[in-house]
Length: 452
Image (cartoon, rainbow, N blue to C red):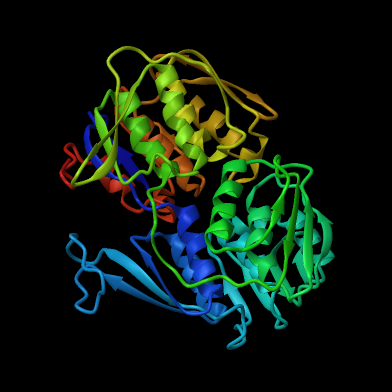
């Protein structure tokens, strides 16, 4: 599906969707727990639905409640079909029933990596597959580590289709983590190894450290013992623990918030963002430090009705800078289009792992920004955007290839808002992977869905 964005002012109040990272972790933990958990106000997206499918494959019962459902135990202010909660009856670490054999994770890399380790806890083979992009994303380091822990792994040279068969015996393994999801996978699964089995992990490389802090926050909340070096280079996790049933709301997603924030930076705003927790461990809240340093006003506030809110606006010009995105690679597409409107060079550095996401985002952003008259210098570990304060597309309506990558699509849809000409973007449907409402939100001239 193609979408055509006509330039216009973007301002108002935006409710940020729930965090994908928190939603998927909570779904898997609830599915492994003994008892009934409630996940309130989760992300309802294609990736989250892929994780729900995985949880059901693993024997959990997942029931959804919507705003207009009379059986909903937590009535919401929203009307209509909006998802407000999932009730999850856990499978107690696979002690109740055996899982099915096939699991399609769609486009969800997070679901793939975390569920691979979970599948290693039981003795029935589970085959994982996914869409075309997933079948190109390697899980080789994770599979090598799982093999070292006694789990049987078969794959297509490290990629899906992948077959996993337990059981988990423990041991000491080395796990380089170009993506933090490899390590989060072992941290979630290893506490459920048999009592007496100890999982010891050496981590010679770790990108995206804040996501490990997020995962460890769940271990701490559930009283699961572990040892970790201060630099996260070594972990020891004894088996014999269990995840507990819980009731929790999912916080807003700073990764998704980067796109309406980028719209505010590009058009001037103001845009007020609801649903974000300033104390959350999500690393992508760094985007707001970046925006401040580039010339935006970023101000937190709080009121009784909406709790914390964040307003982004700009009066003067944007200017470039140098930003280390090692901990926040998902920010690269949004940061690159903001930089295209800045005056001077913006260097996005130490982010080579952006090349192993849904696409090689470094190469893709360079190629597609060139269609808008923006020159970039590609580096092995990043991108330098040579901004001139505005776009200068050589064509009347340039067509941007979204490459089926949700963050590429949303970044260029945002870039179109202050373009001198409309911009057309292909594979726009991929935005539904994490932020299903974003494109509809973007084409509204007035944001009337929320009030501050």
